[in-house]
Image (cartoon, each protein chain N blue to C red):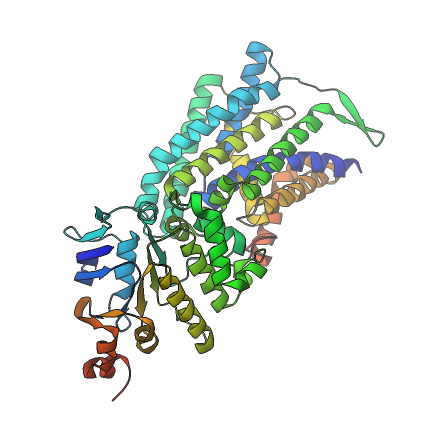
Length: 288
Length: 236
């Protein structure tokens, strides 16, 4: 029971980084290997707000989210768009964008090291027990989960019930047809990339309430987000959310019953099994 | 009115279309006939802004030059393209596809009226608004594609091989709806391999051969022309 609730709380918070990467890959078609660094920036932002101003990480979101949005918009506009324009096909764009964002991740790590140093940064916020079904759980994990749930539900409603959301989904489904109905594909992709970065960063801010971060940790989160997106299937955020819960439960179960050192290995075993058995993801449709 | 002059498109060093001129006025159906690989699709794609035209090409819509403009700006001038692959959003519903059709600014104020018109034209779509387009038959997808294009309130509708892959009965139904669209004052530019059916509903026609326009006349004259009958109508 313990494992299930902790796993679900963790998975729910993971959902943010997965949904962020999915917006960037599914709509803007950029496989952003620096998405983990965006998440770490979100976490460091929270640490900074907390230590400098004694501000709750939830308030830190007010600063972190717009900053990540504009930074990612600029990355798309000035670094990715030239690659998109140059690419002759989707395969070439994927190779180019993976290399470019991989490089970008090292730039980000360097800047974070210069600014914050190489130590683990942590703070204590709401580290008080809260009882669910008679068992105590850390309140910060519950608050982080609820924050993530609000963002995911809000994003889902926006994507599926507003005209702007429909525009984003149209670009994700068929970019060339999107141009034919008068959608500016380049600016819509920039919006999706910026939004994805903002969601990833908010995930970092919320995760920092109960995980400790250092500057080099981004790659682990990039890979976890990647595992979730591939597992859930590109194109629908519902798949990413369900896959996040699966990863959260798997990691918690492995850490509890086997060994905490095996969590990342377990994530990859899951990833490889999915790739071999169902390459389109649990909820993805085979491309026709 | 759509006026194309000196339109040339090269893929690398390969010439797809060279110095093509054509005109389409509101309320007429113009068919462009040509064999596979004659450059018909390229011609339409270049007008819609999906394929870059060579310098010196000229595409003018209602007096304004739209050559070299991106696709999303060309739609705003009143040109809608139904591409060969239909250009529908397969993972979205019929209703969402039609709503997206009304995305251009020029179409937004008329969205409700246009939706009504499209659903009157294709009553089948009204019953299937919630259905995902990927689950529909070829004929139904083509209806969604034409409906989606009509939602942008075009004055010129371009269709790339609309009969491709359709059963003869479905194809006949589609061509009858094109004739009804024409009656509302929309100009239609049709590219077809199926010359017989194309000429049957068209007012005028162009012959495209190996990237060049080799002839143009009224549809009636073209159907009676011996050379056209030999080359495109399979009559010997």
